[in-house]
Every structure is written in C-alpha cells, then in structure tokens.
Image (cartoon, rainbow, N blue to C red):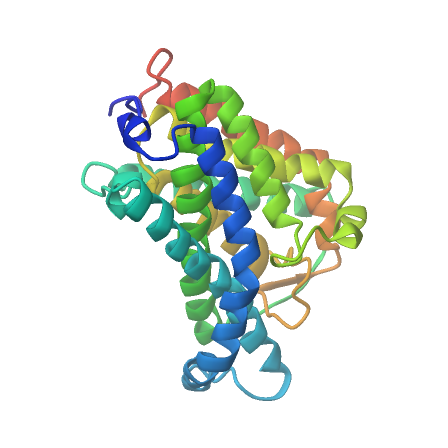
Length: 302
C-alpha cells in the first residue's frame, strides 16, 4: 500500500483553500440535517415502519426503534447530499475517489473490524474480571441485530466519508496532515455531542465529563490516523462499525438509547465506561498500533 497522495484536485477547485471548503461543508451539513430528518419522518416513515414490522420491531416497547432509525439515517443521507455538492459538482470528482476502492483493501477492512471489536471487547472483559461489572442476563434477538448492523454500517459510512473522506483530505490540502487530523477529530467530537444539527447539547457535555470527551477525540484520531497514511476509507469504516456495534447492542454501553436491547445486561452505567481511563488506555494502544502498522517509515507486518 502507498501513502496518501497529494490532493491535486484541490488546486482545480473554485474554492482554493481546503480548510475553507471543509468549514463550509460542515456548516452546510449541520444546517441541513433537520430538513433531512423532517423529510425522513414525513415521507420515509411508512417505509421505516414496514421494515420494522417485517423484523417484528414495530409494536409495544419497540416504538423507540422508528425514531432511532430516523435519526441514525439522517447523518448518511445528509452526507451523501453534501458530498455530491462539494465533491462531485465543485471538485468534479467521483464519489469513489474519496477512498472507496475495495480491491487490495479487504484485509484493512477486516483488521479495522477486529480492532474496534477488540478494544471494546477487552474493555468489557477487563471490567468483568476485576468485578467492576456484573452480568445480570444474556439474550440475543436475531432481528434486532440485523437492524443494528445495517444501521451502524450506514452510520459508519456517513461519518467516515464526511469527516475522514472529505474534511480530513481537504484540511490536509491546506495544513500539516497532523494538524488536519486534530481539527477533523475536533469536528468529530462536535458532531457527537450536538443535538442533531441544532447545536451543542450542554447537558450531554456535562453528563459525559472531560475524560469521555477526550475518549471521543482519541477515537477520532484513531479513525483518521490510517487515512493520513493510506488513501482509503475501508479500515475506519470497519473500525467505526464494530466499535459502535460492540459498544451498544452487544456490551450494553448505550448512553441515550433506553428503548434499545443489548445482548448483555449488567450493573455498570454506560458513562462509567465511556468516562474511564481504561477506555483511554485501550484507544491509545490502538493509535500506537495503527501508527506502527501503516506509517510507511515505521511499518510492521502482521
């Protein structure tokens, strides 16, 4: 694999500064999301209800699924629209040029999946072994998890193509790649603590705590570090998917999804894990691994 090439198409764009294009992109994205959510609610509600009905998730306590799916789909749909505007029309580049070439990157996708699952899995097992967590019950619903995997995959694609695929690349065209990585990770933190697209949720920030915000930032670094070495998105997509799937539907570290089901029920609050030094340490180990694995000047072979 080769290091990420110079983004020559930035020089041919009507907007010459990559940082300005990244800023405009996120502002447009944030201001447009509520419209997508409204359209999904009005015009897509019937389709979403039909899918949930087929999966047996449309009655009783499962009413929460419809709103969760609607909110979750808002991100990737908004992303696709603004990527079409900024990358296809303004930059005159194909969607796949953002890093969707799959041939030769299948192993990176698999490694990303295992890394994300490994970090959350090791964290869960560590908490269990040292009695910080007591498992109360275990249950699995095939239909539930088909929905979870599908939705989290779409969310992963939306987040990675917007933050790492577009913003990080454009910032890297104007700034040092490590500065671009930090700025794109800060943008990722902002998106994670915002109320949809209407602003920052101050109650969420207060509830999360400084260490939790640091962990979100470090996760953004972990996702983006690969992309400043390799011009591809499949590794962070796999990492994003497995991280969120293991964290929520499997290990039950849901924060704001009280109506959702998970495989493990336990006595540990999600915020205690997300605000832990354990998660900080595991994420930093992941960052070190990705740096050593993919930095062309210091690469390890596995």
